[in-house]
Amino acid sequence: MDSKQELRSEGNKAIDYINNKYGITFEPLEYEVGDFLSSSDMVKCTTDGLDKENEQVNILVQSDKDGKTTYKDNYFGYYIREQLEEYHVKLAGMSASTKIFFGMSSDYYDNDLVIGSTVDDLFEKMPGLYYIMNMYVAKTDDVDLTTLETEIEAFAERLKDSGRKYSCVLNIVSQNEFDAITRYGQSDFKNYVRKAKVPDNERFFYSRKVDIDKEEGITWLN
Image 1: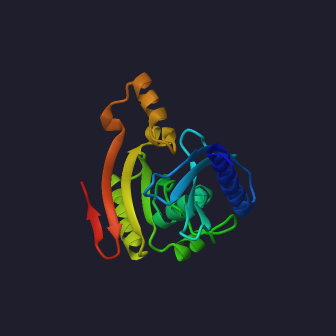
Image 2 (image 1 turned 60 degrees about the vertical axis):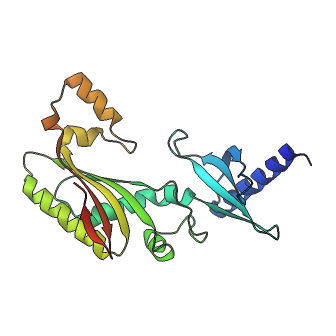
Image 3 (image 1 turned 180 degrees about the vertical axis):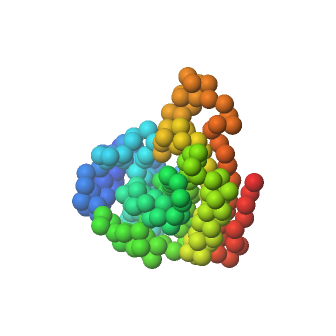
């Protein structure tokens, strides 16, 4: 078997692994070979429901000295993402409309986490996972800004008490911006601003970065 055939064979095995694990079909995109110091290769793939430009499924292919091959992947992060976001919106308990987005595409998940697993399963299986979170809260005329700021600080305390690690950007924004914000940033809103010439002071009312850790506590970075 030549090297290209061997790579194709290993890539197919990785795709078989992830198809069987989740019970859905993945499309291979690329096979990356590790350097001579690495015992790991990478298979990149995608499946229905993912944005090929922004969401990439990675399968880590590892071989030990005895030639045994094992696989890890990051797909579960995409599967559980919306459930995790809904969980944290409820945990925040804000008195105004709230959107929370998680960036989790680079983590490799416990192989016991599959379709049907829950947020609680994730917390139990991977207690040391580091969460990157962006939250947006809509400021309207009938909502007091001070109240929202107090609620955000209380949310940060609840995150700390959970024992999990977070890096967060917490925002209070205008209703127009809130409506336009999507998972992949504010490109839709920027187009709106350019066309409507919305002043900066009508966009962001509050934006703070914070690191949260049970041991280190809450560290406000701005």
